[in-house]
Image (cartoon, rainbow, N blue to C red; front, side):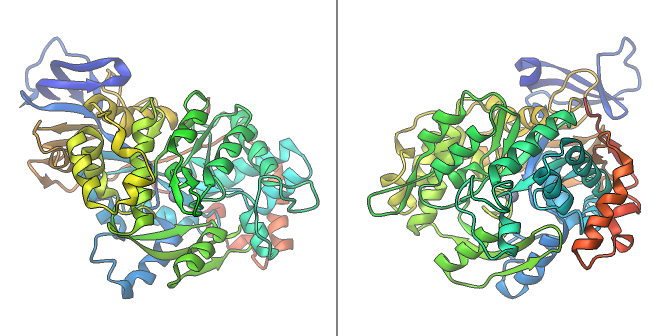
Length: 531
Ligand SMILES: [Zn+2]
């Protein structure tokens, strides 16, 4: 048994905001204060702050895309910048920041073995991955036929067989369009007669996810990412959901208007106006940070467009039966007008959005930059002076084309914990974390309060994962392995033979040889119930 005594507790999910108290840990759980306290390891935590461990809702940390990016980066000096780390180092970097649960944002079912192997190598972290479903043959076929039962089974089959946690949609239909040599321009572009459009794919899968009672609703990467004027199509996508629950990712990249010279400017205010009242939705920001980054996406139309507007190298790989993936090295420069507008727009969005339990911190790693920049981003949110100082250094377009300079709001410590822990836990349907109540997993981060906010968040004084001290006084103790979080929704198993046949008929793949269909998972698999 461990006791953190005399600690200042920040636990917004339980409405505790800075009360001084003791936190008791037995095994891997937080427990109520026991009557007999002999033999407990007492940690004098007076003067420290304790918060639930950080939860990453959207980061690209594993699998085939990362492997491709690492290979691609070898000649780009990007490995040295700490951008594309190997799996074990990714886990250590998250743990050192006090993050204890991390989700990979895009797992190809076909190549899910690679993702699972990477997650297994992330010792100490609890991990999961979102299964890419929006271009899958069996999914598209069921939507075309308007066969809701087949669709639910197809989605559950892909999730279960790939070891996924949630359904990921990436600019739905973009892969199909790409295979057909078409480009998608609106929600209602016909992909196959008028029976298949982006709108229909989004609605059908969002409805199916709800009926499958998945702990996390659809995780949606909307279309038109990064374009000047993208805020309008983004808001159309929000409305197209018709009130169904969803998480929309890296939404900074859609908060752009167009000025009279056709350049991007911030439309964060318009986007916040549309999304703030829609309680069915959660979001992550996709904040950019200055320095090297890597566009790494299944949105092939996006990566091709980035190549055209920015030149430079890019590559893409098509995957039979499920769209494709592409990548392109990026650099956000402090004196570059577009980068400056992107940086300021993300902060403006975070500061204008009223509810940190629904808009979460992310850099869409590695698309917006490294996740180890979170402490710096938090310092810009909590300290108006630090923000203005940074704003003075970046290209003046950040002041001219966004209204960041006019915003006074400063995040409180509680809001930071809501944005990095309590909110993501709720959005992910993880009831045993994101808070410090009795029965919760003992995933805890402690900080020594100080005026240097970035340093405080970058260097927790203590991190506990599942009741084990994994970081103390800057020293990482080799953590034990973490759990692999997945789901097992109910489905009609008789349909599996049909899904396999569809693959066999429409691709050159023999399903018998697909690693993802029957072989083993992470040994510490934890199934989160569908409710
Ligand atoms: Zn992403």
